Structure formats: structure tokens, C-alpha cells
Image 1 (cartoon, rainbow, N blue to C red):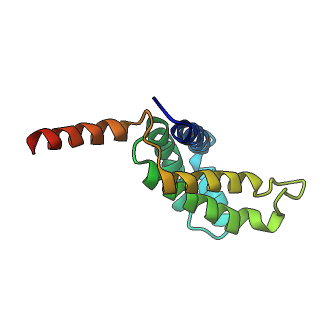
Image 2: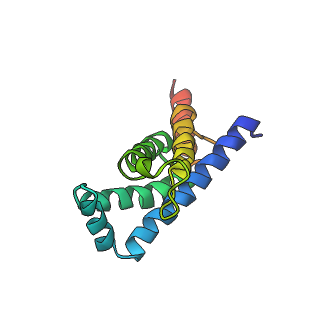
Length: 141
């Protein structure tokens, strides 16, 4: 039976995974070349757009299924820090009427940091893999 903390972490993990997956998918569906151009226009190397989009897409799937939760969440946290500092900080917490502020970025960052610190083993592929390895080790001992 799952405790309150495990259920909460599961909800955060799956929600964050879905949201990042969608963000990555939209980057590719809308034309990744447009994102490359936008990255260059704000002073970032264009190739980073591919990296961010792939981390969001693949990392989102990984979080949904619970594979590498702490690592993926750390990558998401870095992306959110970069987005906040490079793009959103200048428009303020709630935005400027033309662009959204960094309130959502902070929420995503907080969720990611929680998962880095606490992980989320409930209903996860990682738990299945490591539980199996742990039991095999115990039988062999």
C-alpha cells in the first residue's frame, strides 16, 4: 500500500513528466528550426534547442514511467533555471502583458527539485528493475 508521501511524489512525477513531454513535442511539431532561431536570437547557441527539446520529450516519458527520476528531474531543474534567468526574469514574476512571467517556471523548478531530493519509486520502472536485482542478490547471499 502506498503512503501519502509516495502518492504525492507519484502525482508530481507523472504531472511534471506529462507537461515536459508536451513542451518537447510542441517544439518539434512547431518546427524545431524556429526554436533554433529563437535560441540564437536570445544569445544561446542554436544547437541547444535540440538538446532542450529532446530532454523535455524523452525525459517527460522517463518521468511518466518512472525511469531515472532523480537524473531527469535534475535536468528539468537546470532547464527551468536557465529559462528563468535568460528569458523570464526580465518580464517579472507575473509577466508584462505580452509574455508570461516566471511563476510557472518556479512551480516546475520546485516540483523537479522535490523529485531530485526525494525521488519517486511508486509505480516506477526503476523500482521494478532495482527490486528484482535486490531480490536476486538476497537469494544468492
